[in-house]
Amino acid sequence: MPISGAGSQKSFSDLQTEFGGSHPITMGEYASYRVSGSGNTIDMDDFAGASAAAFPGSGENSWFQLTGLGGNGPNASSMSQNYSSTSFVQVGFNCGFQNDTTNDRIAMRYTGFTSAAASIFTFLYVGYDGHASTTFQAKCDYSVVSGGFVGSVENPASYSPASGTYANISTSTYSPVWQWTVTVNSGSGTRSLSSYTGTAPKWSVRAGSSGTPISGPGSSGQHLSLQATRGQNQGPGGPGGFCIHEDMLVSTQKGNMTIADIIDTAPPKIWSWNKDTNQKELVDLLEVKTVEHDNLYKINNIMATEDHMLYTENYTAASVAPAKTKENYDVDCAQLAVGQKLMKEDGTLEEITSIEVYSGTHKTYTLKTTLSNFYADGVLVDSEI
Image (cartoon, rainbow, N blue to C red; front, side, top):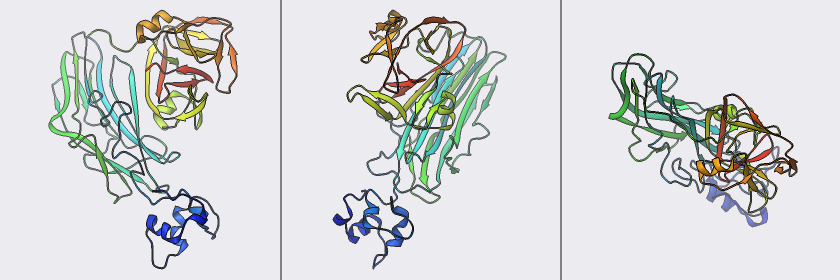
């Protein structure tokens, strides 16, 4: 429990209750927990808000939890992928960790994918206390069996640690990463990977090389099931038409970032708009979806699909094609039109002077945040997830 109150309200006994220590207490032994102060001088006030090292931290879950849905991550639907096609077929699953030192937490990122659908990345977090300089480690226990005679498998990818082997968690990118894929690009038939006759993947994360680990998902892991079939047509897949062009930068606590950098190298908090408090707020990134689309429009300098909602004055949601928005998401919104004013991150309003078709097929994205919106190139847009 972090120490609270001013110096006059704390005693040496309070420090020893939180941190332990020797008898008699020496202030120097608590220097690593200090949150303020300088040099060799440590005052009682320096310890306000400090807490002993703990993972998970105070008030945190004992494993990575799915926000709003309950249950443990990675979830079963992501780890079970099945796709059939008459041409190139690939299915896979990827899970990695990063130490988000900016926010004192470990981030998990995972995705289940096929060659037909959008890429969907889910982000989950467990915070820690007093581990600013600790090197965290992660491992996965698994045994996955390959089936079929066509195509190829990664079981797992060459960069994935062996089963039961701890690896240091990076502070700058997602590493370590475990990935399994099944690919069939010639011939016909089915290739698969499954843990049902082996060991369901179960991850563990610990602080340092000897800390008590937390483990999941569930008590016995989450089974992996990947199946790719070439020679049969399963039909078109993928989501609706929502999305923002990949060149539109996202506003984060680390500045404006490309969607590629957010997915690959950073789990930052995202600037969003809180309609209840009428102000900007940093919130958690929960999910990223990326897909190619050919139905984009350019609204001033913002490139978005026809059904993606932007926010105009007074937090009014509007899209180029409200009927498509209703069809795809069952959400009513206004018609975007020249002369309306878009909500900007800096608090100003930008008048719409042009709305034009943006031809071609482009890679696009959207984010899910805890407030269901974010800023793309400084304009407030809806998550639509």
